[in-house]
Length: 423
Ligand SMILES: NC(=O)c1ccc[n+]([C@@H]2O[C@H](COP(=O)([O-])OP(=O)(O)OC[C@H]3O[C@@H](n4cnc5c(N)ncnc54)[C@H](O)[C@@H]3O)[C@@H](O)[C@H]2O)c1
Image (cartoon, rainbow, N blue to C red):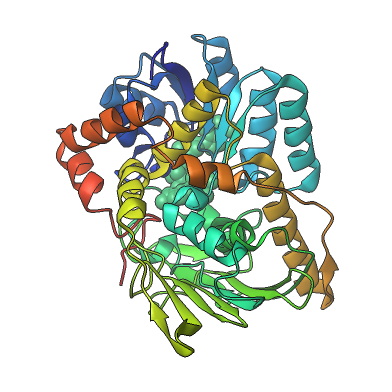
């Protein structure tokens, strides 16, 4: 890629900013595309420590200071869930492109505001999760859309882990269990993102939700032994209605300490599609399809050869969450619509808010928002092979990064993308 690297400001210097599977340790793999010029955290010592560790010229204590500091093209929002909405609105008002952690916001009013500000100012918003960048998810979309499993009856998506208190979080994980956050926003968001990415917008939601236990004890890390009061529902099960008798079940819970079998299954009239959820979840081939008429009217499992997909997986997984920043840089440089787009993120938020409403009322809740993804474009172009001259250099730089963590992640993706070890 030619031209000056994108100038980034990073908001929040906590776990996802600094861990090996997070943003800052992986940005050096795309230093031809992006450069971090400033970082802010309400806890200034964290911003300073990250600035020193990652060679960032300026550390500051607030978003105001970040925006008043060195010129930036985009801000990466890595704050806790309850403040995403207000901080992202401030970023867009300042005329900056945005990469934000999930969810987009916690109210539809904030999500609508983010969409309208971005549209009015021609700003690009890339919102986590980033799973639809994974080529196996794009392949699943393509297979389902082309009728490989026939008319879809239902899908089942496992979306959760055991919660940050079950792992070794470097910072106090209490806020994940408290009102305004919770596993629906933290984890359910992944499965909703994946299944709506594959099947398209949902129309209705029905859900159950509750608190499994009123308190949790942190099992590892510096906060081991701390008791957390659980005020958010830590156990949510949702059913989505896509219309035309197509349904999906998705969990958003801090109660999946272990799980086997595929992460995502799509059951159709002509077959079944499985995604193992590699590399963080499930078992079995990355992608497999059961066909009712696989060969001469005989049924069976087909495990496609995924050579090209695997190569692209290496690229995305090697970048970990910095893949979202890479995506923003590509979208801006080549004038592409993001695959991780803001309308999709708003639809996902609407589903989660509807799930909470349904769990309270006991009724199904109709959805109003919709989205479309440039899925075909990204499949045809091939993520990181959009411009082969860049992809070749980029893959080479992934392989040649010399620090131990980065080299390991380029070839052997971590088993704890969300901070909880794979069982
Ligand atoms: N930790 C993970 O493994 C992980 C994985 C995927 C996604 N995420 C997402 O990343 C986001 C952050 O999670 P985390 O685990 O890094 O949390 P964290 O608590 O470790 O870090 C958040 C940081 O943001 C700072 N902060 C809070 N409000 C701020 C504000 N207004 N301005 C500037 N700084 C502010 C805090 O002081 C803290 O240092 C969340 O949306 C979470 O869902 C985290």
